[in-house]
Amino acid sequence: METMQELIPFAKEMLSQKPNRKMVKVYLVGTVLAFFGVVIGLVETVCHPFSSEEPLEEDGAHLTEQERRAAEETEKRRHHEIILEKEKAFSRKQLATTGQRSTANRLHAS
Picture (cartoon, rainbow, N blue to C red):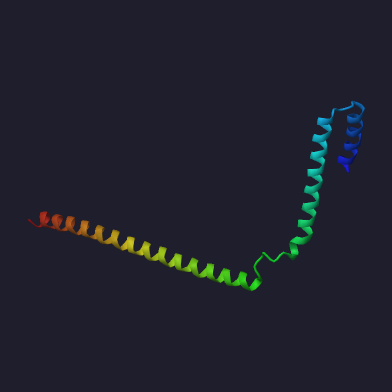
């Protein structure tokens, strides 16, 4: 409602200043584009619930099931990789500490 109250005085002021044809064309094109934008927005809003582009609920459930399975597989792979890395690190550490201990034991034993 505010825009209509602002638009009427603006139109009266524009007509009283006698604008040239170029400015009238620019305002007319802008007004037509704005009007078409509003109409297209209203049509889109009204027709959106009836669009068939959205997947059906069964398809959506099937997709979520596939996504869940893919996520589980990815999680299993990550978990397996982490376990392998920990085992490698442990075996390296064990080898390093075993070598040091054997040297330390020999020094004390002599």
